[in-house]
Image (cartoon, rainbow, N blue to C red; front, side):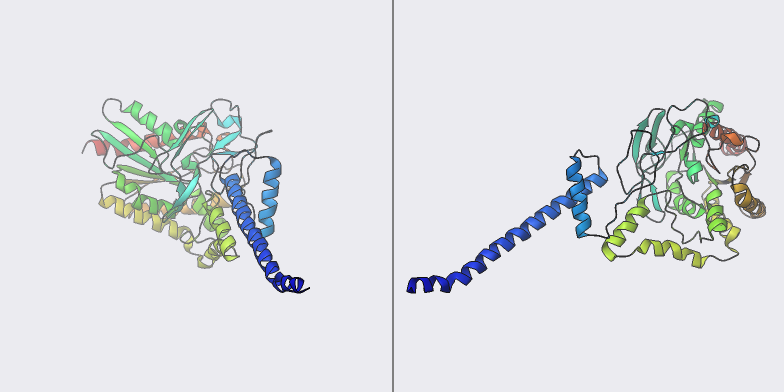
Length: 404
């Protein structure tokens, strides 16, 4: 009986040790399983890994159980039958459309997609194209290390007899809708200029645009990046986005974070929600309308152009502002075109006092609306027409520069 009582005396300690071992094992297992689940989920988001569907489902449910507010980051896209794309927090290399009008292209497209650039965080402009190369069925899309849509990295100084032209702007200037690099506005312009001046000079026409940018991003990009690469001529092929932000949405273009063109915003938004429990990024963008005043349009656009032109003139660089064409048979005819006509008058007036050249392309494609993909984007036929007209306007400028 005494032996039994002695064992009973130590029995609670035995249970405590056993429970501690079991609790430790459960805790360690929880940590290991959780870390494994988050690692698997991270790989499912950022890369195409092959896992059994059951493992994916269990992992997603487990994480959602732990972190109910953690929503899956996805982008809206239209895929072809039988195709799908993984959810990613950056812009996909290929963004698919339901339909592209064949009349906008020189040759029939076998697949209805538009190539778009993946975006990365870039200081002072929020986002810009990531350096990468994509080879599609119609050709190559390349962004170099300077984040320009150009197939070579640029040295800081140009070569002898080289004339460098940079084109900035939003998605139209970038070439949203162009099957490949050579069928953008900049691609056509480079080829036509080199054919025209063959043997005398050679031209490097660099696409320095990005989807969603307006004149504020262009101003920063020109002063911070492009001006460091020995430009001769800089063309802002722009207008639609500024009008849309200011007249269409009453957004202040000096504080508005435009996020539709680059999915960096989506990553920022979800990061803030996961860590803070609220969408701080939404507050940043929504508050930009508080800074909008009735006299902002077109004053702030003109202000951007004046700042750019005055600086570039001091460095011997020619600055051209070209107002892009807008589809008169789209919804833009009701809002964007009347606003563009107001902007034109301000551009003409400011041109008298400041060192830039204004080119009006608003009505360049009037009667050729079939070359538009939507309100403002163009197929390669439209891009070639724009490039041809730009070359005609550029020839007097180039001739003056080469005679110096």
